[in-house]
Length: 319
Ligand code: UDP
Ligand code: MG
Image: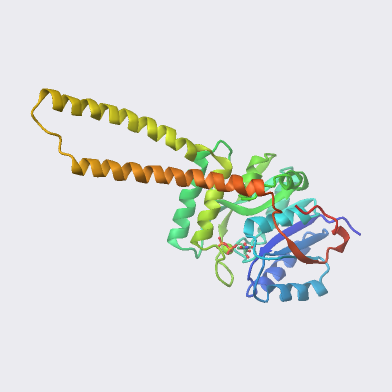
């Protein structure tokens, strides 16, 4: 068997409308490299015909491999599973909906051949996405960057090429709540960017509703920064000083003037302000504690129901 040079990891969740088209675009691009490659589809618990379509494709094309999860484990886990199974010397992660143009893989390969070990794709613009999604994403990347010492590039998703050496290291990071693009920065190596205009989804709907976007951003922040936890100490210090100054003012009024300090309004405002602040901080701590709890349970990251086209590596480590 020829050694596989390129592995393309494609996470799929209910992508029946687009998957055939994605497959065609990918093989057109990859055939032009003249090197042996594999297309590794991770079916993240799809409930539509995605699995059937991929099996049909796999029957006629031995380069297509399919891993079926036992249920939906999420996009970040799906691409992590892809890295566990990928055999290529260079591994590419790409979305199934053609928002990341497959043709860019050739540019990534060129950079890889120049010696870069990670080539990530930076979005210059995003077409067909709501104003809210663009703005919130932009704000998120900038907040994350200001909170962490790791150089996580702005406006960059998971579309990237990684050398085998990098993938080997990434496989060792088994955290349960994953922010893969951050982890890829954390491992280091020689990294470079290529820039692109993000296309519209070719068909189907986004599988990242607001709730999942929020979860991903919380995973990003909690995985790479303690700053939200320190908020309590900073705010506490500031409020203590303000409180002290106010106290002296009230003493002054009481002792040296006839004025009575009016009570109800200021009391209720301070009360409301402090109790909501404390509750928010409790929530922040909850985010971290919940993630610690997830780690201590030490459950596997994902469960594979069955796999196609990859009998030869059945014994692969499955964590
Ligand atoms: N995806 C997945 N599991 C999920 C959600 C999404 O494997 O639980 C896949 C999806 O099929 C697609 C990629 O992750 O290939 C990115 O999802 P999507 O395009 O819906 O996200 P968006 O581009 O809207 O942020
Ligand atoms: Mg998409």
